[in-house]
Length: 126
Length: 417
Image (cartoon, rainbow over all chains, first blue to last red; front, side, top):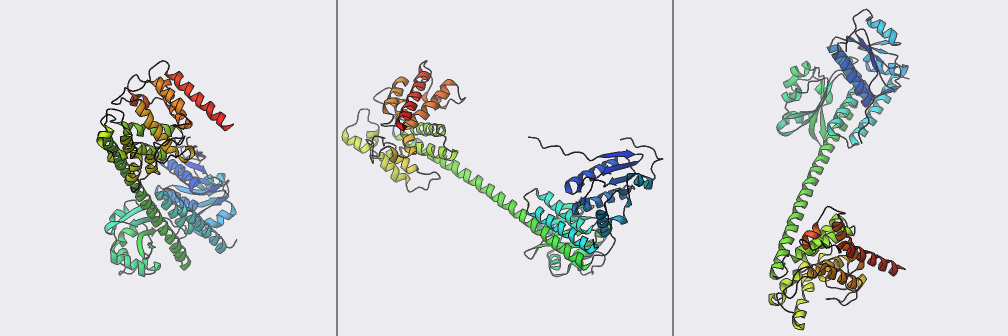
């Protein structure tokens, strides 16, 4: 029997920003999918990334490493990155590990997009 | 939650995941990649790479994150540098502050800095450097603390053991595969030798050339029909090839006599099962009971066989199979003093002698195998080929076989009541 196809990561574009939704548990499997989606969005011309953590309850070590990789790639391509709707426990973890030095945190997606101030820019054609 | 408590929980979680990853039997590269991510994620290190030492001081890249994959192609490590890694403290290998005396770091400092590498740690297994782990800076921008060094050292040690274990398992699997191939070759040689031997036996008897080969094949077909395992089927085939090996010690004139031999000659000829057993017994065969099948292939269920006059349950099933195959081939091939018998006649003989000379279950299995070929229930035509063109082509053949099978089944059912 064929392997079941893993569900795609949910995402959408707002102007030149892409909003990518993290799943409930950010581990190797889901982390790699988010990373691929972020890379794809950057390759398509996005200049800003919002990673939405509204569904995310837990981030493990691999998740941290993958997020750092996304930050790295975004920085190299000159894109800004914002994490939105991160729960308190995860915020503490991000702060403790220094991720918050490289990304802005927003209370929700709307605030994240405002932070990025991308509403006025031209839409990206994917 | 206190940050220190949270850090501790985060680190423990990573260590638990690392142990699970290393103990798993998954893909090697994926195991190293995941382990590296666990290490990087524990302290939020921005990049890293894992390499293993191969021949002549070369380093082979196994996993990278945020570092160019070709980096290790530019590096090599000397024995002296390995010694240095074994004897010095981890903190001695901070790229920015390492003393110029630390060979590896000094040699490649510029390249390492260019790639954003801050720390190098050796993977050590049984006092041997098996690879190097390169690590980038902490996302927090802080320097590595004593605790960080301890955590990194512990995790790198785990990864090193994991890589070493996987490599050992690979070698074991490779050797097992080589052994399997060698064993298969030996079996092939053994089978070829046995068949050559069978041909040599048959050459002695100019009227029964190919007899041993055919008995081997009939025996194999019967055993398969009886549901024997592949290994057992191979064994019975060998037993069939070798069943007449004892004829090598019987006078050629008796074997080739173109007339019915006298009592003395018959007694001489009847020595061959025991002689066969004596020839085969000292050999360490890869299959069970081959000497016994040669010894008992002229035994009968009614106890009137030779050399031991065994009865039904005393005779191994393998010997009963070879016995039937042997008799069937004798009946269906020309002999110096007679033509081969018609199939109808052969079936009559099998029916009459089932339960006396032959085991009814064995006869029924052979009949089923023949019927499958005749009815097209199998694409194989092995028995038909062995018997030669047209022998099983008669219109009444399927009916003869069906009747034989049902009669034997009926008798079998009655005997169980």
